[in-house]
Image 1: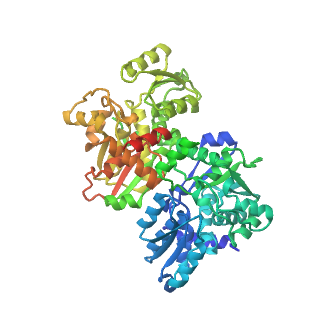
Image 2: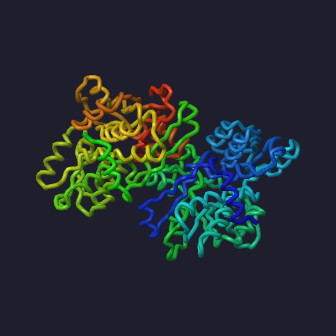
Image 3: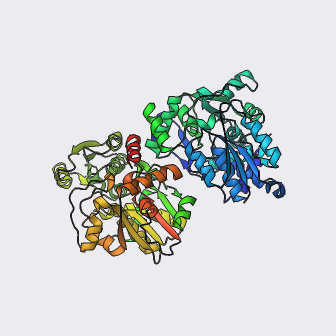
Length: 319
Length: 319
């Protein structure tokens, strides 16, 4: 398991490395939902998403001798950038496996941090198997995108900052792909916010965690089709699933159109660029899908903003 | 004249009313320009621009009996929203004169704050004359968009927060339309930052302030064509011009394409929506037009983010 102490240790390692991102509010949104919504703007984080937190925490806690041989990650994009930057900050070599169809901005940014890039076919190849083989062959440290206690603890620091800066929340919403962000977030609020209700949010079309919650065990789904490229997991993590089962009340799902509406809301009313996977919590809230009861304070992680302007324009035009 | 004390008084009136917006940084930008660039994100301000500051300060300092008869403003959009919200917060009636071709989002938002809207033809009619006549007829307090000491002092609070939160700057960049934001900004940094150099930035196609600086007196230009709808002034203000002449080192200009490039940079690298008029300072910096010499710290006001997603997409596609 991962506990609050692990997140507090991660926060100390990340001090001065990650931005303490602002918590944004919207009077329009508050009036609409009847609660005070506190949005942690991790789109404004370095690399444009929360992923530097977990990656940097992992590398900082790894034995320097082992770490110096280099690191490897497989990722749909944001984790790739997080590991690439974390490696650059530690002055070590990073090898990144990315799907060939990842957004151009994510591929370019990863190269920009000096990482070596290897692309694969997202629908056809098993990235985890390729990654583990490469790591073995080259003696590299694998930085898993979610199934690692140090990665989970690092991601938890976003929620820790939210609670430290604004006080306890009654409801917490976080996106769920592999489940690392949600596991870190739920660990923090269960420890710090009495009676909190925690919801993970994922696309209807990538509902592996919701189905797994219902089945009571990890369920694998076919390769999902969703605009939320950051949440295209086919199965919850072996480590994240039991944590989330224990600490998360329910998994909510949102449609593709609801995601686009939330991206539009963030652009128009908050002046913030949020990528599809980063907007699912806001989407659930705007669609009236979150059981708020008499919650007064709702925390929400806007987890990333890595979307090309052209892709953004196409998404808004199509919805 | 307007002095630092006026801005400090405004800051006290605005406490708890305006957001203390974050100061954003970009490692990419810093590496590109060779200085630490501190960007005050007033796009994240209530109403999506700095304009609530001046409008609220004006109303808060106006005799309640006179104020209660209602207020009037003429504006290309952001000031309209600022006055509409400031009036709503004071529970008084607001009449707003807006150009019929203002962005739909700005018209809608102004209506949304409960203001009465009167539109006019931007190219053909004299909004100032219409506004003054209406104010006289109805006994309304006119909230001028820039030529008012209380409005200038209010706008200065954005720069005051920037300096308070990050320390003195060596260079300050602010957009200039009528000149209210620049007058407030230059007043603050001249008082608080020894040896600062202050630059106003405007579109090449709306260079009334640059031409006036060169002529040594206020020069009127034909109605300008620029994507920066917030900076379409035809002549500097009678009050703002002498302040800026005394406190501003020079006026820089940027092309329409340079403005769009800056909007793209803000979207892609900073995840921030910035409207054309709000992006001119960043545009000047990215285009290498700012005489930086050995400046280590550059302050910059990203003054607004009120641009429709569709207009944003068209602008980026055309550049």
